[in-house]
Image (cartoon, rainbow, N blue to C red; front, top):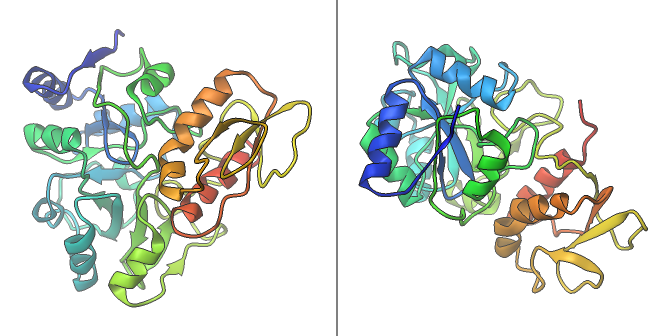
Length: 314
């Protein structure tokens, strides 16, 4: 299969929408990372997402919609959801809520769980595509399962070219980390840290979120212990450098092959994380050593991704 590269113009949106309506797959940019989109109502399209990525079927998907009003068609809405959505949507926040009956969504999307992960993205290209398609789009990150997430169209092409119909090229993703996922089916729970700092969510709710534990059952995307991994090994919290290593720095450090943020800015570091990992991995080091990252704000999400990238691989 030849993978088309589409521009974010009327012709590109028309072609991408046509592919989705026919059950095909289109990678598209969001403010977080590129998503691999398929019609969330089409069993075959959703099955092809899992196939193209090599993703385990028990790992649920996020459904992207064009508005809060559309989201309410698919999930049982709550006052807490309304508060968070009114503040942070569109944006890098996914809410997990009870799935309504008879939504028409493929059961593969939820991995047969009684809840649905749903969000309204902020990226103008994602919004334009969702409006043109006029339907729910299931879209995990557009990369082979377990590998580094894509923040540019070229990253998608490297991992999935020939497996999907098209890539809608909207440039680099601004946030650079997947969305933060909050479960609202019961007590508000952080299911995955991401591009929206936990502190902002807790301030909006005036409460401390419970946190999903690693030994809890899988309840949302991005919870597998090994994920986001380059070909090279990963060593965290590096303050020195071995002969077989290259350093991915943070802050004022020497010897770094690349630096997530020389000034120590966590927003800049989040935006650079996956792209820098792609670039360093292409240099062929045995190990990528990574400077310590403060575990606050977006640093919590960065450290979550790095721990999963460094975990033993299946």
